[in-house]
Image (cartoon, rainbow, N blue to C red; front, side, top):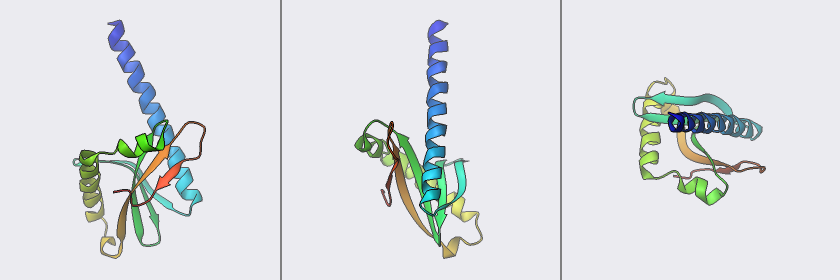
Length: 123
């Protein structure tokens, strides 16, 4: 039983670190002039970490906390990209102003003791 508790403890710690990273990324985007429309959007097709808007642009942002920027970007593989695109299409389909909006897929890398790094139009 001890091993199972350890796994659950690691999972909870990773969940907390993920939430903190997403909030940090959202604050960073707000400082860059984006308005946060949603955090942690869950749909039957996938999850979107952050939905942010600047003018008529909606950015669907995946947040990755890694020691290296390249590791953060590489962590968003093709399957993750497909899920995020599918979830974003569903999210947009529920908005009355969707036809006026352009969309983009970004990644924000969160590294220890560094400012977040924003990769616009990452995929």
